[in-house]
Image 1 (cartoon, rainbow, N blue to C red):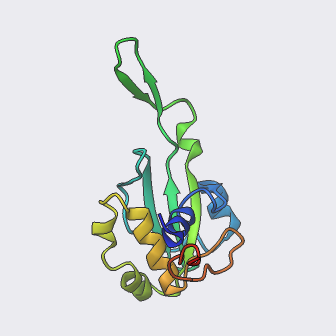
Image 2: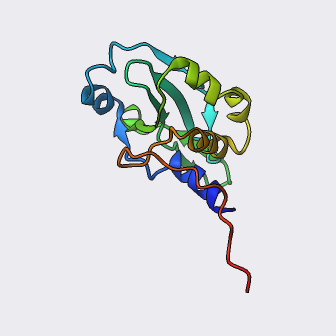
Length: 156
């Protein structure tokens, strides 16, 4: 995996400070009354954790809503059982991953997302597109530059 792929995965992963959905809406009074675009509500990562991609029109924020990983137990016969423990819904987290100025820009930047989110590299695709467009945000809210692929070690 090259540097660009690692950065793309990190961008849509745990490096973006998460907050719960209530904290997200309370942090900016423009969010709750704003129109939102749902850009994918059935996006699953490699572990089967469901994500949603949404855009808040009044703030220009593109965010990922991530459900917590399901609780999986194995019975003595090798069967797997998935359950949602108490408080499961309270553990959903929001990760703001980009600032995009308009709905038109969202559609342009994310053209092809509906197909990409169905594949194994959905997070990579999303991170690469956001970085290339110059709209991806880092944990501190700073833009994430598109430095291109990691060239690897220098030739000897």
